[in-house]
Image 1 (cartoon, rainbow, N blue to C red):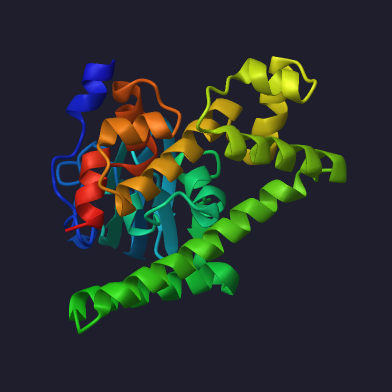
Image 2 (cartoon, one colour):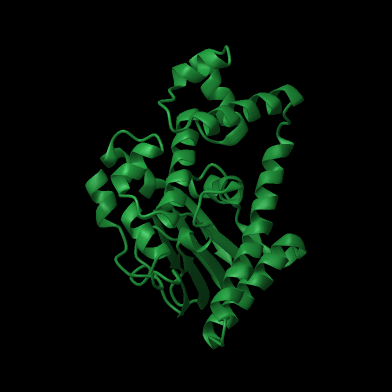
Length: 295
């Protein structure tokens, strides 16, 4: 199964290391099945339909898309676009790597607004822009990005990133508001999760296990896991790794210490595990990150 998944990985490079995004304009009057083949990639994708009607096959879901719709395709998700033969259908695909929006260090903005989407804990709905409102604003911003990309005037990269962040804000705000409406948290729960996070941030350089946290806060390991994930969308172990990677990224950026030393300083006792964990959250290896920060 894993081998089949890997075979579907798209080999095309979208943009470059310094500016990892591009836009593809697709215009067709026949079936797109042969052209937009079944594939996946590390990049996220906004698919903006400009004319006609087609179908987006996203994993096991079939989504009908029509002019005015915007579909968001998360990274590493198998997808395929088709349309009915003989009928006009056009769209543009804005494909961008998470690194375009990621900060160099895993900060609060990344934790709250980027990672939940990248982990698919929070998913954007199919955006229907005919009703205006926030959906119409997202459509306006993506159209503006499209125009900026085609013109490529001085500073267009900066403007594109600003517009993309704004579009991301509208999508996140809508998705997260829907989640919050489903349930609110008490002052005690908020205080407890803040205390757990503070404990992790103080002791991240030390061995910190789920058992240690459970004993510290007088909870069972199972209850601690369920509670912490309901509040942060991450398990305690995921958050520990997330924060350790954040701290190691800062050291990679401002120190000349060897990568193995940095791993040990930030709580990782296994260099292979550190490399895998760093890549999971930063979408590049520690050495690649250091080179990108110090060209």
